[in-house]
Length: 469
Ligand SMILES: *[C@@H]1O[C@H](CO)[C@@H](O)[C@H](O)[C@H]1NC(C)=O
Ligand SMILES: *[C@@H]1O[C@H](CO)[C@@H](O)[C@H](O)[C@H]1NC(C)=O
Ligand SMILES: *[C@@H]1O[C@H](CO)[C@@H](O)[C@H](O)[C@H]1NC(C)=O
Ligand SMILES: *[C@@H]1O[C@H](CO)[C@@H](O)[C@H](O)[C@H]1NC(C)=O
Ligand SMILES: *[C@@H]1O[C@H](CO)[C@@H](O)[C@H](O)[C@H]1NC(C)=O
Ligand SMILES: *[C@@H]1O[C@H](CO)[C@@H](O)[C@H](O)[C@H]1NC(C)=O
Image (cartoon, rainbow, N blue to C red; front, side, top):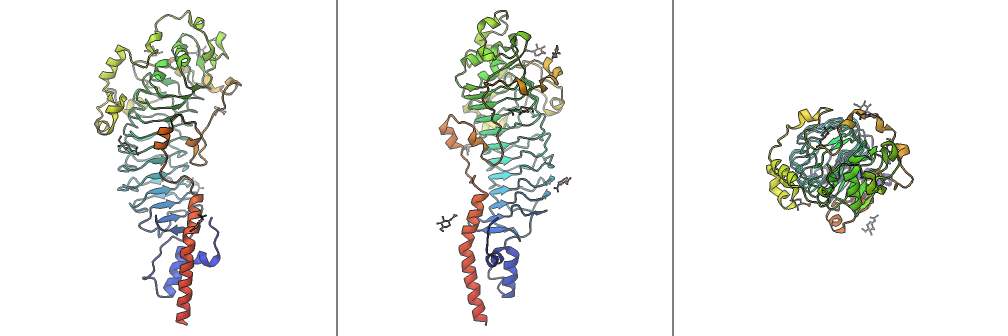
């Protein structure tokens, strides 16, 4: 907290200011409203109420507040009227929010950063909660006990660049749930319970740079699950339950530079050939891919296998299908049929995404049932679904040659900067506009910004007192 002299504290902390001024009959003249036990400073109007055991949103937050910091309290509910539409930044992570009224942020067209992370009992969100937040560029929902996301929850968030959904209990992502997020560059989904990625799970994410899905229970990835991710540079799939992944999945990722596949029970029989072949051609950095089966392959790195190791495989998984990054004719046809015109950057821009043609496949309900799988091509075999318990033995499989796994740590807000970046141009484009340094920065500013005000207020009161006498 800000260290203040007792007198200055009295003058600046809301309740006391009011009391003093009322005594002097000056309230109407000088209305500095700041909630009790908070620190406020102007331009932009900022209210900092962090770590004060608030059980509810404090009274007296100035109407025109642009930045509100309420993290590390015990706040349980967010309701309409708690905040005003002037809000640009709200940090309310690490509280005990259990309910968010879907109208809480209605009409908040200026809101750019919303940090609701680490509210473990939140568990559910209404689909309308973030509706209309067209300027939002960072949304933090990590560690919120979420087991599902309602359809449409991210619709209209065209400016969102950072979406933090890690460390929840999410088992399933509906088709097209991210389809409006044309500007999203970072999507953090690690530490959930996802077990499948479908053809349209990530549709529309044409600007995605980093996709972290490690520490889930992934067993099945559709061959076209990554088809729109032409700008993806970093993909983490480590510590999942993948026994296979078709090379074609990765062939769509033309900008990929960092890939981590370790900590999965890879089955290095003929199924692995397309992945092996893709890895051979991959020019970026990739983790080891240690085989768990079949018997003769156990412990070997798929990347070290030779063509002879696959000599008994029939040509059904034709190598040249994935040699280039283009689709086969059959794929193109399928592509057309599915109206997936977002896979091209040009078309994926702007308004096109507002007119997404309906999916041929039924939407969420049937697919959300565990065990449901879409018909059609699979990157990973369905059989493995029945062998869920098997991948539990993950630890020892990791070889000494593995690069240390990077598990982004939320403490605090800088995690994505620690992941290597290959494309400085894009990185520059995606830097956050809101200051990352706070809350320390906020406190400094509060201390500094308010001190001159405090001093002048103090001087003013002293002069007044002298006059009254
Ligand atoms: C947080 O909320 C949950 C659910 O209402 C409650 O069980 C828990 O005791 C609360 N925790 C604290 C620290 O208040
Ligand atoms: C977001 O996307 C739209 C449309 O693609 C673009 O006009 C806009 O500049 C983007 N905003 C940012 C912050 O990248
Ligand atoms: C997908 O997996 C199922 C079950 O293992 C299998 O019967 C089917 O042939 C597979 N489809 C493709 C296209 O590989
Ligand atoms: C499940 O795994 C065991 C070995 O772990 C294997 O013997 C069995 O064939 C597998 N079952 C299926 C359906 O893949
Ligand atoms: C992978 O998961 C296991 C089990 O949850 C865990 O012990 C291990 O630390 C994880 N590995 C990494 C690199 O996070
Ligand atoms: C406080 O403000 C002064 C000038 O107003 C500036 O020189 C100083 O660096 C500031 N200190 C902090 C900690 O921001």
